[in-house]
Image 1 (tube, rainbow, N blue to C red):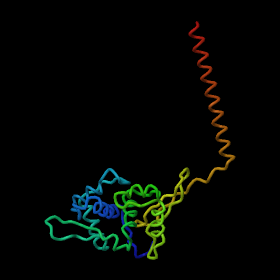
Image 2 (cartoon, rainbow, N blue to C red; image 1 turned 60 degrees about the horizontal axis):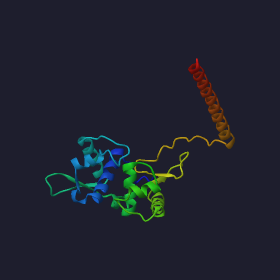
Image 3 (cartoon, one colour; image 1 turned 30 degrees about the horizontal axis):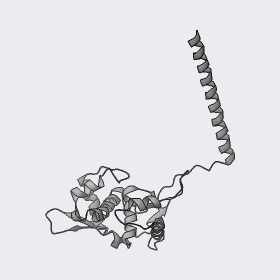
Image 4 (cartoon, helix red, strand yellow; image 1 turned 90 degrees about the vertical axis):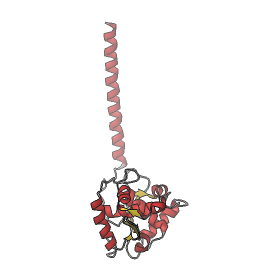
Amino acid sequence: MAESTPMLSLLETRILGTLVEKQRTVPDTYPLSVNALMAGCNQKTSRNPVIETSEAEILVALDRLKDLGLVREVSGSRVSRFEHLFEKSFGVPTQASALLTVLMLRGPQTAGELRLNCERLHRFADISSVEAFLEELAAKEEGALVVELPRLLGSRENRWMHLLSGQPVIEATPVGRSPAAGAQDIEELRARVSSLEAEVAELRALLLNRSHE
């Protein structure tokens, strides 16, 4: 990630994501008050991980986001309201900000999951268009904003995650098992099944004998 890209905390990315989401899904309530922002950050649905933050924590995070030029306070209301400067600050179009928003709110996802979860923010024509924007975000000259994660064992697609909170810690994945090892596992399972079937047959015979006594 480029040094010019700020390192954001989970709460700071949650605030940014919530501001972008609510701007597009409930524009009548945008910009958001602190209470509305706190409710959006603490949502139990469409959030991963689910968090429980306080008004004081929200205000501290907002101050830092304002210092970074990512959020600004809107005047002209008795209640303080806040709006994001996401697209302008990171130099991304609305399609890309929709993908980043869903990644900030829901965590790592595949291109297919992103297309589905972005539906209310931006409707992508197909998965290829999602992948094209992800690749652009990963190749930004100023610093990558997303990264493609190593494929999980048993998964058909790779997941993507945002880099606004730094590079991910990639856990060591188990070394792929050889075909011979897989065949051995199958034989062991078959042996266990045969043993269990034999035990069941013995129990049935025992019960049958007792019933005849």
